[in-house]
Amino acid sequence: MIVWQKPNAFRILFTLRGSVIPHIYLQVLLITLLSAVISAVQHWIPGSFPSYGAAPFTLLGIALSLFLGFRNNASYQRWWEGRCLWGQLVYDARSFTRQVLSFIDDDTDSGQRAQRSMVELTIAFTHALRHRLRNTCPWENVERFVAPEHHAGMRKAGNLPEYLLRLIGKELSRSRREQLTSDLMIQNMDERVTSMTIVLAACERIHNTPLPFAYTLLVHRTTYLYCFMLPFGLATSLGWVTPLVCGVIAYTFFGLDALNEEITNPFGVDANNLALTSISRTIEINLLEALGETDLPPELMSEGGYLQ
Image (cartoon, rainbow, N blue to C red):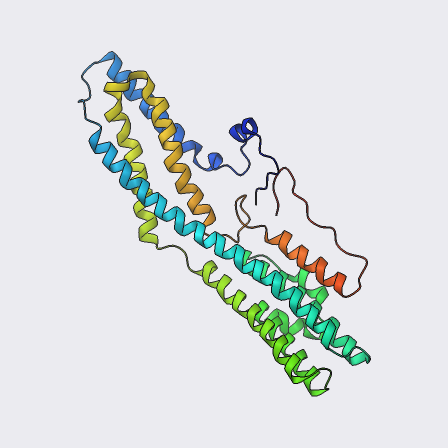
């Protein structure tokens, strides 16, 4: 995720990291070159292209803007919902840890083991959820927080985050059987586990449900058609300014299209996706600190304005 503390207007104007230019420069260059060729033909052979009014392009441009705007709203809504869900996960992890450490009897070895196990499983769940949403290998971040006897079952699990939540549920059940806390507190802690289950399901819904392909295809085709048709309608009236105008319009429309495509899946690793690694590290630090650990991993800092 791109994070700028104090944006500089000049720097923002020429920055490439986080920009959609690397994804669309070929399309913009193609439209600009096409416009230059059409302008040259119109200049050297006047009357090669009929003079059109601006009305058709204005109407089509308005329609295309509405399509792109609606798709932008849908994509941003998915991005923002993903951020709210991970904010909820931070709240649930901290609240569950506070409840475990406050209300489970730690006067016995069994109680202390239950506390550490559930807090570490919560950290493991956070990392496992991130890796599931990004389709990456989770074992390096997850296994060190899970007891060795569960490693074999963990590797066989089809849904690793859900498997870890089941392990937390078993620890709660064992705490109840051993009367390490009251039934009321078990119920309250289970509500936090249920909330984490809701976060998992909602993130999977966003991850596994793309925007309708037919709508995406319509926007793509309309954008290309409009940008390819535009130079023919502007060459007679704008002359050599046509490549500049068409290039700027192509950058705007292709840029919005590419940005929408990028943030449709907010859990990826692109520059404008959510900083899930940083959020996971924050949860890990907070929960280990609550356990009394002093050898904590460092907080992730932005590098070049980019936060993982």
